[in-house]
Length: 295
Image (cartoon, rainbow, N blue to C red; front, side, top):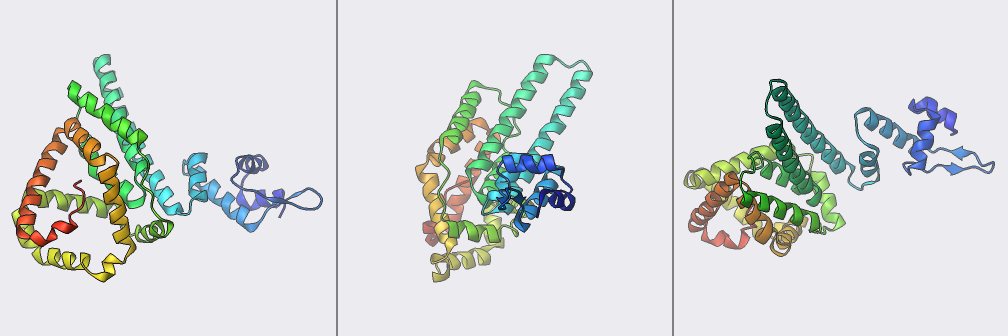
């Protein structure tokens, strides 16, 4: 199929098609006369590009989606980033309104700096951890990044976190595990992860009540974690990789202590988590071997 036909089918201009070819989005073959021959695959890709561009995605974002073995996950990342950008934009609008009513410029600058700091941590968390874990970590820690940095200790903790996230290597996950995760991710929507997090918060605030209410489910889960089905599953491999990553990367020794210094609410949450773990292990002593890294 020649470029004129492709332009008619996709609604793109010939210049746009040439541009996407220059950027490596498509790679049409040449016929014996030197004319480009566009395949059905090229047309499908161009249709996707046109759609994503109309939805505001950058060319780099589109390339990641198209070239990824897990395009859905790349699209999820784009959605989350847009949500973060929208949140930042809304807060910037409120700051403009404050400025309209003669708020102090220095105070506005300080608030803008705070917004950018919170966004930088969230973006790094999303990029560092793959798939479900990226969204889980982001949703988990976001609620603890809404406090201002008021002390030198918090400022140093922020620098420690950024340095850690900038220099750490992403955990290496086998393709077959990533493929399993990708297939399961349609279930783990942001709302479901949010519900999971809220249930976790409730459980550590009143662990005794939680253990009474969910003792049967906990026992079933423990039995499952001991079963051959789980032990031979890709999810067991995934949990082992992530546990090793957290233990050996400095996540437990650098990132978590810095988060506790940066965010008073996270420090309180962490203390409650430690107490809840004690109550839990006292009630279920055999469960200790299955305890994962504390988040």
